[in-house]
Amino acid sequence: MTQPFTVPPVSSALRVALAPRGHLRAGINLSNMLLVSAQSPDGSYDGVSPDMARAIASALDVPCVLVPFPSPGAVADALADDAWDIALIGAEPQRAIMIAFTQAYAEIEACYAVRNDSAITTNQDVDKPGIRIATMVRAAFTLWLERNITHAALHLCDSLDKARDAFANGDADVLASLKSKIIDYDLPGTRIIEPGFMTVQQAIGCARTQDPTVAHWLNACVRSACAGGFVARQIAARGVKGLKAAAPD
Image 1 (cartoon, rainbow, N blue to C red):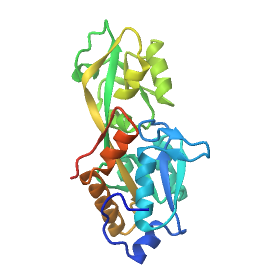
Image 2 (spheres, rainbow, N blue to C red):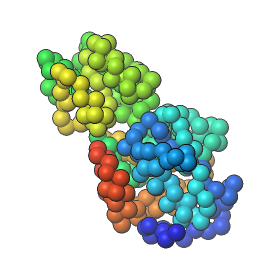
Image 3 (cartoon, rainbow, N blue to C red):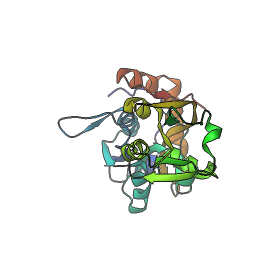
């Protein structure tokens, strides 16, 4: 396989550090269809995140083994069980305590949705006493809300769809979710607050206990993938709407 972007040299020590079992285990989040968009008949996963994982494995000259999880929080938790060698999830400060993240390779806008008769017209209007925000527990944008919302109450749900249901059923005044999901839901009598309240930074992470050269090498790979157009080409080839290639830092 021809490497799709320029990668820095790989030493034997780096290969052993990242793929000690002779293959690269990449933790992926199945709850975000922008990143893991399909499952092949043979059971393998396709999408921009699997594309990135396979490209990193190719650079190491080892097979890639995708390790699926139902949510980004589950991916992060699995580090404690040594279930993956790299993880492809949103880079957030809470996760960065244990995970060393690269720069982002892709960005996803997160927005609020409200009912048409709501007095809320801006993002700042949301953080008021008495406002209930339905959101998915431990999603990257929910971690942002937990750091930044001081007056409104978070109604935490197990999935994006359950957060939508809580909002649709009147259990919340605001839905916080990925903009693309809100558009897909097409909830009658609602509107999206523009612009989004934050942008999820999708990145690649490794255990913070790794030698710093490992994270440095991964970051150089991601920077090259962004600068050379690999990420943008994969997004375009898969026809993903709502996912944007990140600019190299």
